[in-house]
Every structure is written in structure tokens, then in C-alpha cells.
Image 1 (cartoon, rainbow, N blue to C red):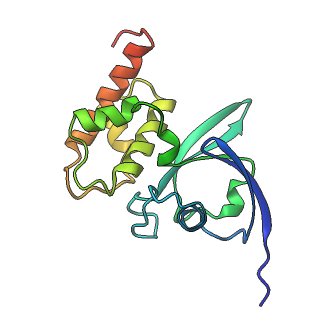
Image 2 (cartoon, rainbow, N blue to C red):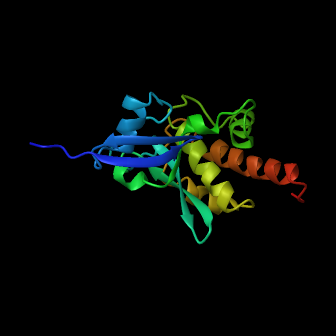
Image 3 (cartoon, one colour):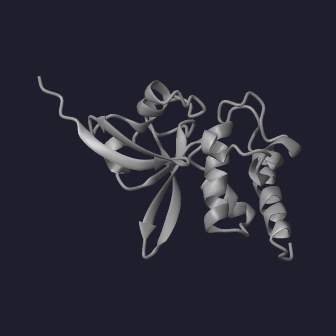
Length: 172
């Protein structure tokens, strides 16, 4: 049996990568096994739990639109020409507003779902800087958490939105 490889070029966090991989290889497996980016968790491997969530940026109409995706269902061939952001891509010298809010509002316990929750939250706040509680609950609906009961996670996202608006000098 011959395995065909395809050249896939994309931006991984802040690095342009060009890889020769089977186009059907899952992004989750590539991230964890080939790039050692283990912040992207392997959970259900069926796209139901959100532990493996990443953000995909795609150029549309002259602007890059970002949306969360489950990397356990995302073939590498779909990444060509796109921007893939993992939880490691959110790391900066200081915690981001979303990361700070998760800490300050007690949005994490065991931490397993936290990377996916943070990425789903970040994608929401990029699209909608002033979300309602219903917006947050909808954006997080693809991510399962068995520890916190979601209330502190939702509170964290709303707090992060408020902080980000204040940092931009907007009324909260």
C-alpha cells in the first residue's frame, strides 16, 4: 500500500511550517506527535468534548476570520494556507485577558478542558467583543467540563470581555 504525502504549508501559532504529511493525518496527531504541542488534549477523538480545540484563521474577503475547530476531526490537508493557533500560541510574556480571567474567576479545576475552553473563548471574543451570557454559553457548547459546572467559566469569559473593552478604552 502506498501512502501519498502532500506538502501542506500553514502558519502554526507564529511560525510558518511546510510539512510533507498524508493529507488525512489528523491535526491533533501532528500537533502532539510531531510538534510536541501537548497543550492540545486528546479526549474523545470524535469531536464531542472540545479538549482538542484549536483556532483556525482563514482569509475571507480581505480579512482573516478565526473560528474554533476540533483538531481530532481536522485533516492536515485542510490547513494549507491557513493559520492554526494552539493553546501554546496564546502564551505571551504575561497572561492574556482570557487566561487571567480563568484564574481570577476560578474557571479551572483539573485543567484538562481548559485549553479548549480558552481557545473557544478567545475565538468568540475576536468575533464578538461584547458577548452576552447566551453568546458565551453557545460558544462554549462544544466543550465539555466535568469539574466546574460552567458558571465560573462563563463568568471568566464575560470578565475577560469587560477587561479587554477597558484596555481598549471602551465603556464596559
